[in-house]
Amino acid sequence: MGFVDEYMCSKFCPCQVSARASYVGTEYADNVFDSGAGGVPVTDKFLMDCYDQAKTQYKFEFEPDAKVLEIVNYMEESFECSGITTVPNFYVTRSHMEGPPKESCGDSVSQTAGDTIMMVGIIMLVNSFLNFLVFNIQYGYWCKKSEKEIQKEQLEKKRKSDQAERERLQ
Image: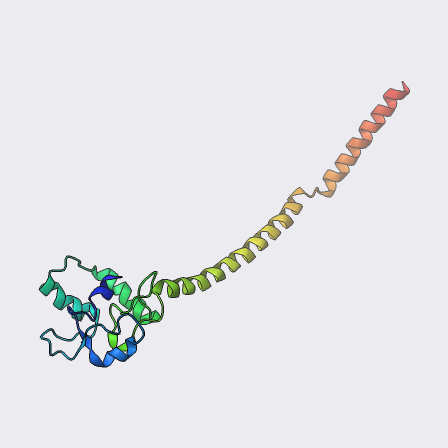
């Protein structure tokens, strides 16, 4: 169980009662969904609502990095996902009122990257084939002998065969 799942909608960070319907069927359906009457303010998002109030009250030692939070926020907003390998029950930067995340960000990012990488791979294969084809055509031109060279070789062969014939006759 992740850090967010452990504290969100718990006695540390009670959630809105109206959000309970979104969590029916999950292990969090019976968690603390409160109207705020218990003395602890009702929270909407884990960061920064729940975390900020709980870290002072309960002395959390975990301090999230601002750059990481920026990336997490971007991924949650762009892909509507949360978590990397498993799907947690709460978003980190989005409201719990939206309900639990549907998929992990790892799946979303890998699918998006996979589509892009496949296209790059196809382009590289086509490019490699064209380079191979062009190289072989050029190699044929490099190895091709000119008419002068062919005539010179034929004359040399004729001269050698004539010389061999003369030596045989002597």
